Length: 383
Image (cartoon, rainbow, N blue to C red; front, side, top):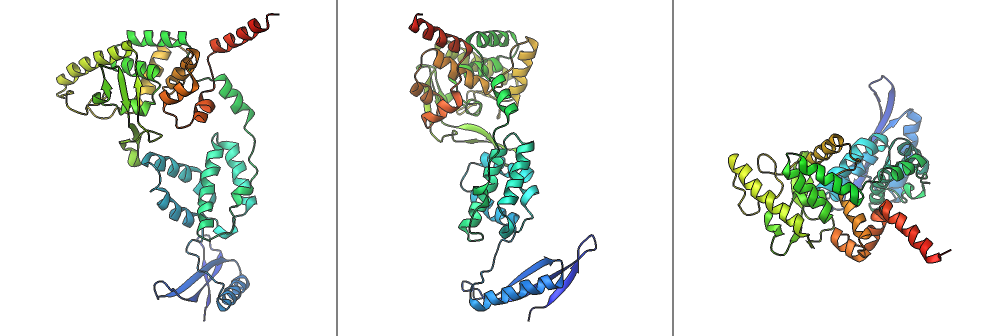
């Protein structure tokens, strides 16, 4: 017989609980029991106990191994870790730790309904720029709960998503993260004046290749073919658990070879010679196989955050327009379009798996291209 017992919370409030035998596990042959707790009155506990006994007698009871959202998350994240890159896992875990679990972790999984989900989506909308991503990740756990049979329907599918904030749209439009042709030339000239040839070579490469920063920081000299002016991009530097830097495949998992202009190749050759001289003084032989093109003071991975320090420093010193390091990839794309490259050519060079990504992310063109568009229109009408 199951006995209902009382216990006290830390604040002194009284609650009731019970444990009941539910049969033998057919997989292990061991006896199974389930515990229910948290009832405010003895009457509530007795009612729940009666319902459980009825389910057991009718053969409709199924022992739930995950009772809360946190329980299901712990099961889901273990599977999820095996399906993504380490860096993606770290990013996702951070979203749950900072936003989802504090809000929903303690909820009983079967009690989560559309009103609960809507309330939290509205809260995330009010305080987070990437509220859609947080909602999407939170919903993945409940998708998993549906697959495991803990719930019948994912209530997040019934949530009404808030519209994009007007201020976010206006801010995005106001802060275009790329340089025009003239701004890029000025930026590189200013950078060339500085006593940091490594930074100059890196930013020149990013602007003239369109590669991602992580791809550039993972380059080794055997990826660079000085005879054919080509660079092989087949890996990227990323951040994993415990802030560890490691090499992974490219974002799309596909390697590509891109052609470079002769001046950029010449600058890379100059950096290779300077790197050899500078690091020989420090006691490092940079002529070894798989030598990093862009290394730190101990000849290991350059911290990705270093580029922000370099780019902000030169922008502030010479009062240049502010863009991020990733903005040089946007710049390369915009100037390719402006130079007359086709969508397919831009897609292949930047390493996008489908053309829609190229169109969605890099549909912006420079102000010069916009002005030329209306000039062409006016000339065509000839009114």
